[in-house]
Length: 364
Image (cartoon, rainbow, N blue to C red; front, side):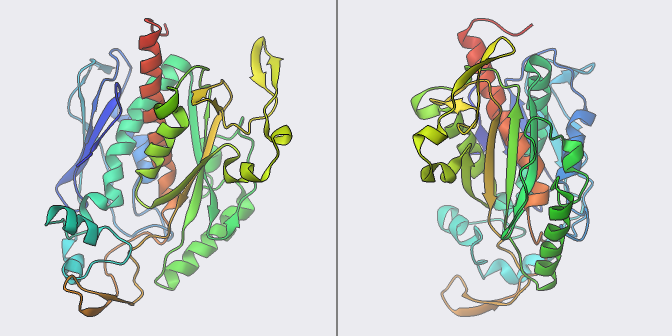
């Protein structure tokens, strides 16, 4: 199973939805980076369940413990072990689903691949696996912020058929995003999104959505040409998140409807640096960052586990009706915001170290 991500800054996540705990091992983080559990906990608190009526009812504090790799508040350059215990486990909720694969979930495919699966909560296919990503991403983000001043902000830009007005990519902050539980910085849209999610929950159904993200202060020159282009690495990272079905960067699919004369980003001298007047490229050209904000969007499908009765079949092919029990998000995007930020941080930390190694130097 591919549970390790990255080349130089590497993270391996572990744990299932209803095992004793989940977490990550971060290998390749440079030494002497100030790091505390509080740095990591802030992002885990944004991802944790039980935040309100628009999220799952599962109650977890998701309290992280740093097991290794840090001493006296500084990273040692050795592997950083991160553990979050599972406290509110209710595997009995999934007894009925042991013999019936949930439609559009990973029950069937995991069983076919391994001949066995964690039948409670989806195992490694559960969104609970993302705790390790968020914890490791917080470590990467601290490194990126101190070394280069990189800022990463994600927000909910769409729920169902509703799309919110785009914010200013240069000024949007996490505080602005977190003003609403749905994590949309536009107040009017946030209210409408909340209503849409609550309506889906009331109907024992689910709804999809879109998370947008901007990465500011990314220096020019990060990313590898051809197969490891920066946008390809970001796409890989985002598409590895549970429930993600789409990724687009910069103009994305809308760029296919434009002419080159309108889509090109002309260069200008700004603040003594060569910049671009527009940013349809999404901050990346030829697979390499150009110094403009890197911005992209991630599409999440409706959660597969719903309480509404569905006609399906059991593992033997016999007709069955499944109305899933358990505690599940009616829409994942409000809690997916820190997950998107984490995966962006992991990609950028890895590409930063690769570029620093090429230059045989390190930002002082």
